[in-house]
Amino acid sequence: MGKLMAIAQRHNIPVVEDSCQGILSEFAGKRSGTHGIAAGFSLHPLKNLNVWGDAGVVVTNDDGMNERLRLIRNHGMKNRDEIAILGCNSRLDSLQAVVGNWLIGQTSEITRRRIENAAYYDAGLAGLPGLRIPPRRPNVKHVYHLYMVFAERRDELYKYCLDNGIEAKIHYPIPLYQQEGLKHLGYAPGTFPVTDRHAQEVISFPVDQHLTRAQQDRVIEIVRKFCHGR
Amino acid sequence: MDADTGRRRIGYVNLPAQFEEERVEIMQAVEGVFRRGDFIGGAAVAKLEEELATYLGSPHVVTLNSGTDALILSLRVLNIGPGDEVITPPNSFVASTAAIIAVGATPVFADVLPDQNIDPAAVEAAVTPRTRAIMPVHLTGRMADMNPLMAIAAKHALAVIEDSAQAVGSTYDGRMSGTIGTFGCFSAHPLKNLNAAGDAGFVVTADAELAARIRRLRNHGLINRSDVQEWGIVSRLDTVQAEVLRIRLRHLPSVIERRRRNAAQYRAELAGLPLFIPVCRNIEFNTFHTFVVQTDRRDDLQKYLADKGIETAIHYPVPIHLQEAAAHLGHGRGAFPVTERQADQILTLPINQFLSTSDISYICATAREYFA
Image (cartoon, rainbow over all chains, first blue to last red):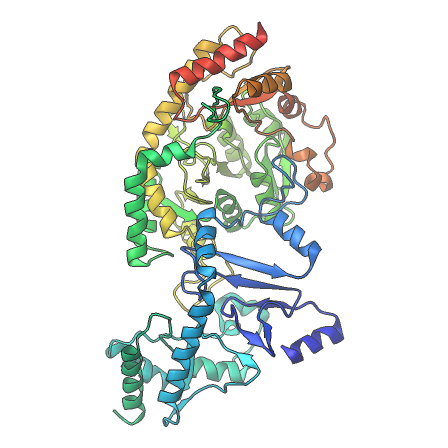
């Protein structure tokens, strides 16, 4: 974020952070979602802070934006009868707010356990042939919405995990710019080589706060077996 | 009764009473969702869609986050956008007009009839070469005059998007609300006759392809876990809400029956007072999302009722064309005289299914007292 904010400032471009997977994560001691003018958070059931259905939050340090967003989420209504701007219907249900309020106090602990689980994986999976753990930078607090590594023979490893009862996932196998829905932007295959390589190599292992050490040991054992030629 | 004052108090809605009737069913269903953890796209969502399709007699039902999204996505899959015009009444809740604006098209207003629904003659007069669709709103749970509207649509090759947000279960000439036009858009907002525990909605159509496209658009345009075919939004009905709606759909006929009984009692006991209450024609089966009376002394009557503990509402006091947000459309006061006159005369009396005969008698007697 340091470099990105510098670019934004130089060109006077607002930064809107997509913090959907990054609640309580930090860069240089500053929380995700508080670097730019605004940030979007998701509270989808699979997120670290999750509610019982689709839900999200936007944070901003801009008063005008705050007021405008509040209007827009409720049809642009200033009060029951008057519409200031035409908006949409994107209100968080009270029911979901109750869940969120109850969980928000637990999010630090959830985060701590995920970080602990990730560190355990990092140690257990270190130095395996054909497997690379992404760099852990000291000025980044990673909250492990996902625990992801790079594998040379990813598709085979993925299948091996599933065959052995481990629910691994791929986040995400097809880069956005190669989606049919983005054809009109005209990007040729290979335009983003790092993204392309990652799409071929990423694999995510379960890292949630309810995971036991025994379950993690099982994941490590299976991955080790695979990397050492089974 | 009001606990503090001991005075009679009749609220406009009574959601806690609804919960008391269904507590066990709801809590079991919600717990089931938790045990399974299928919060998004659970089996209950598809089941609800099938049950709604059966209830409405329409082949395709797609559940969404809101009735507003149902309107927006219907317009979107009809490829209605900039340069296109959609004819709609100016006396609705803002969502219908907002949906047209949201896709970049131009709302063209047509004034309404004494029964508050869009006037087919005004629709015919508003058609231009740029008109793509008519969006009638079945206000108060009474369906708009669909036969002439469908004839106009056929004559000019226009799509018809029914805003059925207030009219689930209503019929017109034997046909269910939402199943006559290209699309029927429904809201299941907590204050609707069929209500979720939060924002919710659905769209119905007989067109399989259009339904499939809305299904994709509601889920980011994804055709499976990884492939995005076109750009969509997130507008999925939560599984929890689907479970709540499945239970309440089973209760809907009884809700409608009780509201119709309340309406009949109002009609009988308000007879002879200087209140205009639109007649229910033989071809209409009205479900009374709201029960609206019209009077020149509206504000005064509302205050009198409030002083006697009766909560009423106004749907809606400021017509859409006179809203600040609609200034760019350039309509001044006087543009839609029927709508504007009604905005000053309409008053919505409580009609929810939990009112007793004695509650309604009290309201009618109080109104009679006012006019005496």
